[in-house]
Amino acid sequence: MVLAKVYNGSFVAPTLMIRPGDMVRLKLVNCLDEPTNLHFHGLEISPSGHADNIFLSINPGQSFRYYFRLPRNAPTGTFWYHSHEIVPASQMARYPNTSSEEQVFDGLSGLIEVQGLTNDLPVSLQRLPERYLALRDVQISNGAIVSQDIDSNAPTTRLVNGQVHPRITIAPGQTQLWHIANIGADIFYHLSLPGHTFDVIAQDGHPLLHAQPATTLILPPGKPYDVLVRGGRRGPTALRTLSFNEGDDHYPARTLATLVTTGRRRYRSGCRTRSSTGRSTSRACPSSANAS
Ligand SMILES: [Cu+2]
Image (cartoon, rainbow, N blue to C red; front, side, top):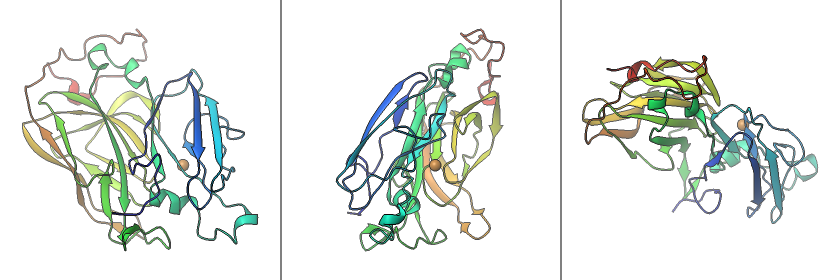
């Protein structure tokens, strides 16, 4: 058992799935013994009122209803939400150790997907299996996440969707859409999947005009990527974070998950099919999906 701060009783926070034009209504009930709030990182919505208002501070035992409409032309892709608590000056003496960083490190962050990213892909890539990889790390001491006086250079445990070293499956030749975000408070990730390419189709919740192949991805805290991954030869591949020197901190290499390529080979007709939207700006075919 490890003490953490969680949403809805689960260490893996709910993924908010919304579409451009949606009205979003969220009730935050603060069951903590300190104030908190919500920040919808990157969404193009009002920064005041009941929307993305980081200056709100919801006291213990109180609740608040967030609501906002996402613009119809909102960009699609992966975002994240997290506590952005800034304790008001009048409450500082009462909550001297409460802040956004501590609460995020303690667990208060999760994924947002603004859906519709695949609409501008070629038809053959519009119904892809999708995976969500929420990256965070935990330092644990005496049965609780260390959330005071955080030393981001200290040994830590890297988690994917709250799990240590989970298994992800893919079929040979199959293309999957991975929504990846670093929802941790402090440390960087330097992702590598040997023998595979990350075809980036969006970053920071903004679709790219052309897919950009990458062999590694660097994710500072708060960074999301939407990438296509194509299954290679049958067998396991380690999804690694490579060693990364951030300047003050040095984060060692770690295996995050195992991608197991298994099952029947998938063939596709390639990328010659036009985008269903017929838009001349539709994305170029990702290189690793460009077979046949
Ligand atoms: Cu943020």
